[in-house]
Structures are given as C-alpha cells and as structure tokens.
Length: 246
View (cartoon, one colour):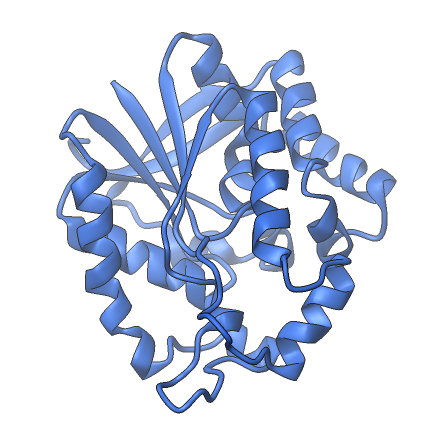
C-alpha cells in the first residue's frame, strides 16, 4: 500500500502531517508527497510586485522554485518519504493570457479561486490520476484557511473519484480556531496515526528545513518549536478524516 499526500506547496503536507509521515515510513509503508503547485513560473514572465515582495521575504531571487524544492527534498529526507512535483506553478506566478497576474495580495490569496484557474482542476485531476495505480491511500488538504491553491488541490483530488483521506493544514488551524465546525461533519471518520517523541523530533527537523517560509508564520524558531510542541503534547497523533467506508 502506497500513501500519497497531496501538498499544495513545498511545505504544506510536512507542516501538517510530518510526524505521521515519519511514523508510516518507520512502519514500512511507502510514502510519497506530491507537490501540486510546484512548477516554474511561465518562461519570461514578469513577476508581480506581490510575488517580488514574497521573494524578498523568503530571501530568494528568480530561482525561488528551485530553492523551495531543495528545502522540500531536505525535509522529506528527514521523514523517509519520496517527493514529486507537478508543473502547475504557485498561484503567485499564474497570470492571464495577456500577462495580468491572477493573485496580487494576501486578500486574493485567501479568497475565491480565480475563474481562469478553474480549468486547472481537470488538468490536475488527470495528472494525479495518471500517477495512481489504484493501490494507494490518497490524502489531501481540507482547505482550512481558504488559500486558493489548497482549494485547487482539494477540488482536483475530489474529481479523481477515489476514496480520500483529508488532513487539516498547519499553521492555518492555529489561525482559525473554529475550523472544525466548518470543515468536519458527522459523515467523516477519524484515522489516527500516533506520533511518538522520536516522530515529533523528526517532524520538527523536517519543518525547520523550510527556512524560507518560517518567518511567514512564526516570529522565530523558538516560537515555532513552542507552537508545534504544545500542539503535539495536546494531540500526539496525526488525525486524518475519511468518508464512511474508507
């Protein structure tokens, strides 16, 4: 049995599920993390001011995708999982045919999916389907926080038509304490994967591999450690939600 975790970006699945991924690998399971929006910006595309601002915050220049991919490889090596990425670029790089960027602010990032992006749902559905053998547990994000790439990933996964497991995204669940009321229903069953102390240590090591992203969500590494440690102590399991019968 192969476990496939769909990650909207080069960090989401590890931030959210890293401890459980390590435990699955230790148990001899085959685990892969597929980054859905991991492609390069269109060739010769002019970055929006918003994308340039994010690059500056991350400490990257034009090679941001390759740098984030390298961070991801380092993180996954801590967990024992295998990575793969699709060619759809991060939403901050997507643009109309005339070159107008589709998302140019934090507000737009956490809003409705742009109409021009809806055609990507079927594209990604087909790409995901082509890599599946039928002997997988497919795990996708719930979409907590409403990031457009998380919405895109979930919609594409659901169109595949296979039973799904869902994970709740860290750090967005910390910012939306009422998320369970919106995203969980009585029709979902819980699949619980215990995370040991060693599993937590590997999880933390994998999270800190995403050096470019840490300042976006945490004040410093101490704040990150305290946040994850408190969460793990209160919930020493990875919870995945499935429809009845999965």
